[in-house]
Image (cartoon, rainbow, N blue to C red; front, top):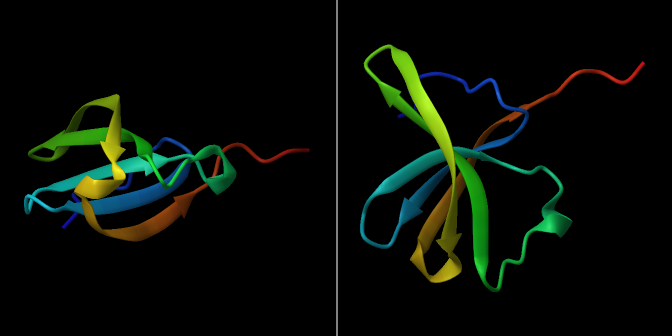
Length: 80
């Protein structure tokens, strides 16, 4: 299960891969920017213990994704 809620705005997702691995990250909430026939770009949030280690953008081919769960919607700054 995820350790901490990321601070990056977007859709917080947990992807289960066909290999059995899991990747937690944040993806753009505008689904029109994704090409589901090819795959998904996410910003992977890496944790170690209680703190966040870092983040990096990765591309996951659609054939590798067994399931996807939206853990939350993280908002950015409000427009005023």
